[in-house]
Image 1 (cartoon, rainbow, N blue to C red):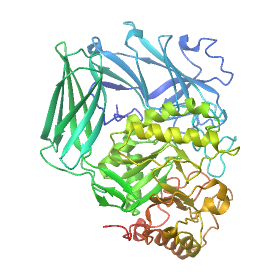
Image 2 (image 1 turned 45 degrees about the vertical axis):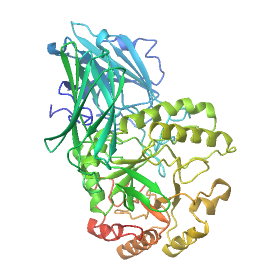
Image 3 (image 1 turned 90 degrees about the vertical axis):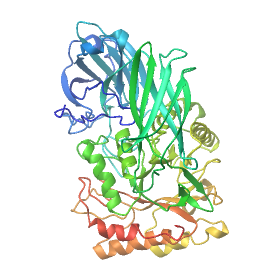
Length: 582
């Protein structure tokens, strides 16, 4: 399997031994006229080109590198189903495909999924034949429609400012999985550190009333506890008392392993997962607390773009590198910006003890009409459900810098509803309803952005928080758009963005006036960062950004992942102790 790109199992949190990675060469064809359905491309024996999945056709790694607009694309691949899977259900997983995806097996429609950032799957068992099989995937994508999440994909022909090369079609791993007729589908972990236990909500499919569900927790190979129950519904709650307490902490990603067994009709479905024993609290008085200990959030903006794969990491090692590079610079987490990061990134964050705020790519979505919520909410709910049990995820943020230019009523109602739904799905984490504190009535955080480049002015902007004044960038530019929520915990979730260009580039873009010397760079960086670390009313910062992305050159690393300065120089500044820390 080593010759298959991105060959690793894409879901360490729900692993089975019987699976097949379908990455690699597929037939491919661009369908800008959207006539493929009418011409029945899904019944053809081949398409007119080739592509390397899971990389989008815009990327170099796909073997295509076509960066013009593509309205629709087609994929086709012959597949072999192992004989030993004959009595099992066969699940086709597509971990991300932008944007509206229809799947066919042997020319027959299996189903359609809307949403370009999140994982989805179909049971294809009844569509398979004994004499050879093929999968056809059709994806439509319209970044200018306003009816889909776009994120940082450019809506112009070329990249510009902080908008980058688009992604069309498949951009995460495609894989098959064999499961028993009765099988575990997913789980949600609710850790409790006070009594050293975890409660699991386990969802199953195909099980009969009275079937046995057993879950065992281990740590370092040693059994920590187990629980067993009889199936009464498709969702069972089970509590496991743990023999030993191993807390998940910043920099110490201690994880318990889980083994799920569903016994039905003499057969046992086995799935493996994991969880972290940690709790998150956020209050105005104590700031961000992990397991009851105040932790200053030293976050960096991570957009998850790569020169050769665009929003698809070229390798599993590339995911690990970004986390370790961030930690080497003194950060303890990241704001995963305008993109839903893949589960393997979250897995590596889990193992490293690396905190993340999870977002989605809401830019490009027209939120000004409340009815458009149908184009946003289902995918967002899928994200919260999928990533719920990752201990590294310490907060959610569905919207970024979003306002209604034609009056606030509809956008505020939509954003508030998404906040309410998020809290219903997950009441264990804080939610930033709209990063940048753009108008919204419900949120857990007063979250602001500020790219002021003068450290003294920057410090003064946050010197009167005790008096109820946060003179942030939005308030200074357009006070009508800012609603003061200073009674909430305060997070400066974008600052810095200091432009430092490694090589002469007339197209380079960044925030504010570019520095000209290394001394000037670090003087500005330290002044801006100290202003936040020394403010007792601020619980976290997020520096813009980890790496350059195309023409935006304000990263600590270049786009091809070279440190602009020694990481120790960054860590000396970013890792200083904050006044609010224990």
